[in-house]
Image 1 (cartoon, helix red, strand yellow):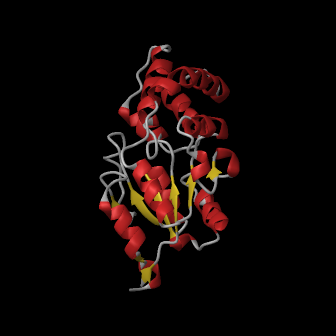
Image 2: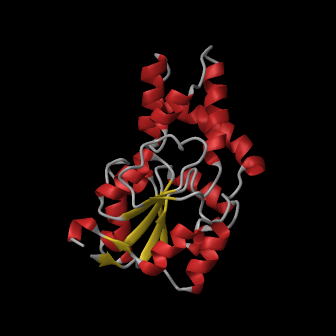
Length: 227
């Protein structure tokens, strides 16, 4: 059955901004101080998780003696120095936002990042006012891959989850959105291109990929409702 799209929800890290590049630099710095390497395998295991869970993965896999709080504080200090000079919007983001606003399509953000970081990142480009809401790690009790944040997003948008298009760059985040019953388009980066996205509606080459706008305009086949 054909399902219309009435709203769009964006992930933030790696989808709206190049923050996954910055996470690599921060991860390299943190583990280099401890005589270890921030491997691709560790990066993928942490990607898309809420901060406390991601740091616990680092602690467990690298057998660190640090607490989650210590790693969070160290990361925040590194980011505070790096973010203003190195953060960039991902290609196609601003054009897609313009197009959604021209068509008066509601949009929100659902990120695993903490409120403080989201505020800083969005503030670099004055983007927060362009969204109906920003949901962060503090907004939910269960982080991605649990669907809570995307169910809450649909509730805030006052539409069924199946009428929401979710744009995600990670396996963890796209799994959460699919579990919520939303239409999901994966927009992987160099960091997540090898992830399993077999559960999504489509995989896009970027936010500028026409499959994104075609799905918004034409809707999609919701297999759970029959064809």
